Length: 127
Image (cartoon, rainbow, N blue to C red; front, side, top):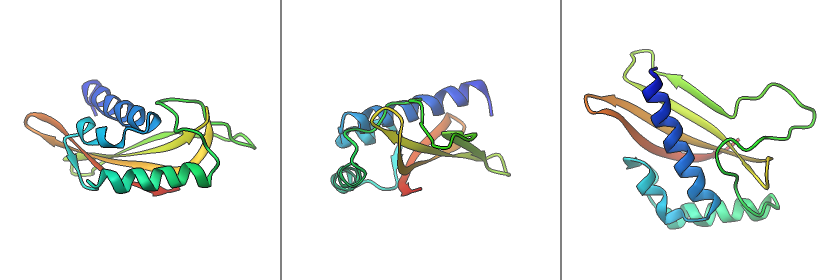
C-alpha cells in the first residue's frame, strides 16, 4: 500500500466518523464513492438505537483514544490488502463518549482502479 493510498483511506474514515459524530447520516454517501448499504434513514435509526442501548451520547471522531479495562494492545483501524493486490478492506472499531467501546465496526472496501482507489461503504457490524 502506498502512502497516498493510506492518506486516502484515512480521509474517508475521518469523513465518515465526522458524519457519525454529528449524526448527519444523510451525509454518508458524500464521504465515499459507493454505498453498498445505501439506506441512510435505516443506518441512522440503527446507529441512534445503538447509542441509546450503550448509553452513549455520541460517536467519536477519528482517532479518539479507546479506554479498555484491562488495557491490552489494540489497533482501532485494521487494514487488509487483497492477496491479488486489487483492493483493500478496512475495519474501524468505533468508540463513543470520548473513548468508550461502542461495539460497532465500520467496514469499508477500497478497490484499485486506473484512476486510484474507489471507496465503498459496506456496513456497520456488531463487534
